[in-house]
Image 1: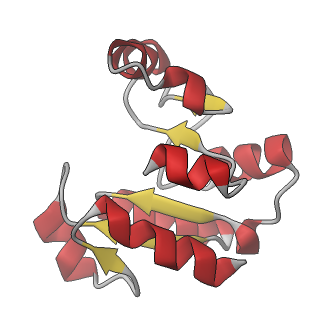
Image 2: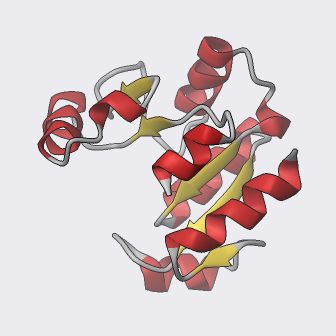
Image 3: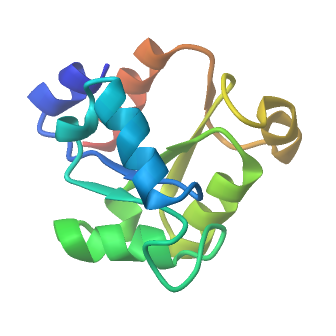
Amino acid sequence: MLAALATRGVQQAVLSNKPEGMSRTILEGLGLASRFIAILGGDSLSSRKPDPVGVMHLCRLTGIAPERVLVVGDSPVDLYAAAAAGAGFCGVTWGFAAAALREAAPAALIDHPSQLLSLVEGMT
């Protein structure tokens, strides 16, 4: 999915509340770190999600307006950060807090990564 998004010119970044070093180590171990233009952790900036500072930092870094950004996340914290930044949001049913995310009722919720392509293509 990451490769398919990249071939469509989609810039990708990671914004985690985990420490940045841990996030980088995980992504490097999976051989994925080089796919992202930025990897930010909970200790990278002055505050963590749900504060929108991370989303806004990535918007400035990429030059992309928040309303053209799609935050993909697995918890309500991700949903709230996207909303506070004025960005779109897509929830995923796998991951950290799927049940709580379902309860938060995001407008978009997917069960498989392949479903992300149609959402992204609908934004262009």
